[in-house]
Length: 228
Ligand code: CA
Image (cartoon, rainbow, N blue to C red):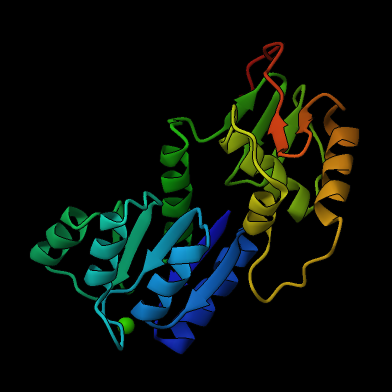
């Protein structure tokens, strides 16, 4: 998933970036509210982590403005402001979650997973699609209950396609969930990853919609046994 982090503390921002990348996300990091608004006007993210005390405009103003613009991406406020009134204001301004500093990175990652899950309309932590089970927390994929090793990028593409089941995603949209600004963009990389996914998980799993993009095929059968 592609995450926008807005945080002006260099040390904290760096730590969060490293942690989220280790959890398999593509992370773009900005240090001011204006930069966040500017970027959100043109780029797509699956989630935003937003500090409130920013050097130019306050995080609450950023949040209110993007909600006014009709942007529905999940927003997690990450701040040192810890009063009940602060939390109420944050949530009522359009935040989906609120985490107070200091925090534990594992908890942040779990909240990110929960927000992405909810955005996709899912209550279960595991994504089940026919005979495939994807575990976003454990970063594992099972095919007929057998673990299938995937590269980090293959996993990300599959995860994004499964979270958007029923929708066609353009190559650009898939690439946005794969790469942060710092990562080199390889040409044809997405096609190559899709090719590998089909080889590992079945060639009918991912459908190419000519001229538009890719989508996950409708699940044809249920798993033979329920994973424990
Ligand atoms: Ca701050």
